[in-house]
Image 1 (tube, rainbow, N blue to C red):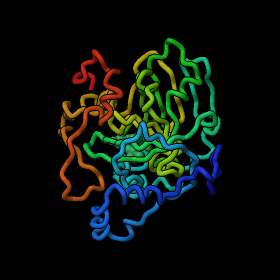
Image 2: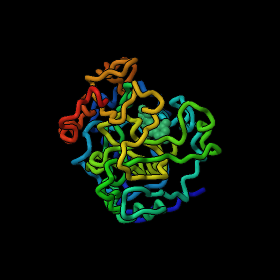
Image 3: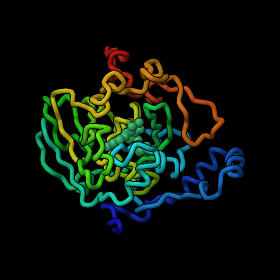
Image 4: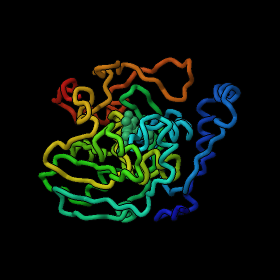
Length: 317
Ligand SMILES: Nc1nc2c(c(=O)[nH]1)N[C@H]1C(S)=C(S)[C@@H](COP(=O)(O)O)O[C@H]1N2
Ligand SMILES: [Mo]
């Protein structure tokens, strides 16, 4: 099915993918040249595909680190609805239907109901933010997302004073999502944030990647990005947003409560029971590249550490 143009699309604002390639060349300099000579050509030339989005860059909230390649970001995925291997989502999510799409808003808010995705996004300008992504499995990437600040969207529903948390739910559709026919997790996938975390300007609802509509394997048409937390907080294919007074259940916490907490803030000082979180493997940096140190709050401590004043981060992992 051909992709319909996005609301608010202005061709003049479309960023050609060449810009990213140029930026990459600029940043890697002579090393880029050296790398090019050892990377197979087919891999090195994969370009972003999909409908282009109109967006504004947000350099203030972006890392200056070099983004991972389109290939890395779209073929090395976690999305258990489409299989548990990193290559499964890109192989199996191709025919997933992301249009039409609506999101139910429920719970402790004045404005509730079912909203077409287009209407949910219409009042908001799309922004590009280059964020570090840190998976709990101790690998990392740098990803240029396109999306809208989560807090700006949530405010429009006018959450009441009873809204202490926000819960998110992924689509349940085992016909389209083969992984939901297995019991590897309880379905649908659910996640949640404390309301102040959700309202933090870094929290993003992503609809795109590299200036293009989000590929299905990356959570189309709408997914959450909370860059200071482990990747599993970034729930994909969101169909429900619910304001609650109680801490909501989250999929990985329910599956293995001693291994995955509700907060899931990236923290080199708190190891996973089965592996260290002190270092990480940066995807795409080569077989012989040294592991990198894990940064507290994934490098966003300056912006978010104050959210957790007085909270024991070892107990509330
Ligand atoms: N619905 C759903 N959302 C999900 C997951 C999942 O299995 N199902 N995996 C999570 C995990 S563990 C990670 S690391 C990120 C990966 O996002 P990416 O594939 O776009 O890099 O998605 C998160 N969101
Ligand atoms: Mo993850």
